[in-house]
Image 1 (cartoon, one colour):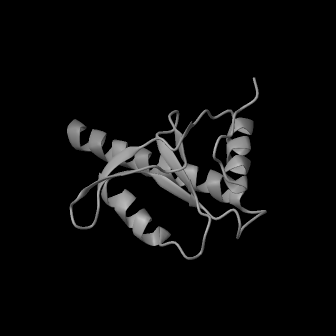
Image 2 (spheres, helix red, strand yellow):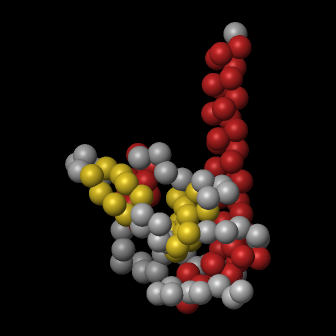
Image 3 (cartoon, rainbow, N blue to C red):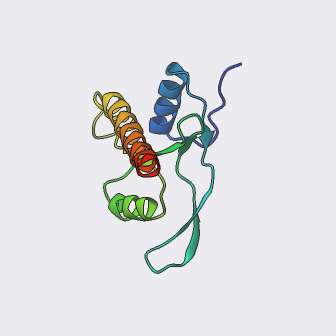
Length: 121
C-alpha cells in the first residue's frame, strides 16, 4: 500500500519517503504536551514522530520562523527533536538527519551508563 501524504509540504513528503527508505515508520504531526518558557501548558505537533527511536523530526519551512525558540522549548521539556532545513541543505539533510540520530542515541547511551555506574558502585 502506498503512503498517504495528507497535508504535507513537498519537503515533508521528501522526508517521509526517506524515512520509508530507512524502514522507519512514523506518525505525522502527533501532538505532544509541553510547557513554554513561562511555564504555560502547550500542545505542539512536530512533523514526524519515530516510535522506534523515540524521536521527533521538524521539517523547517521558513527562515522567518523562530526554530531556536522551539528547539530550546523541546529540550527543556525533554523531547528529542531534530530540525531539518531541507530547503537550505537540499543535498545534505539526509546525512545531517542520520548524524543527529546517532548523536541522540550516543547521549542516551551515556546517560544510561552513568545511571548504571552510579547503582553498581
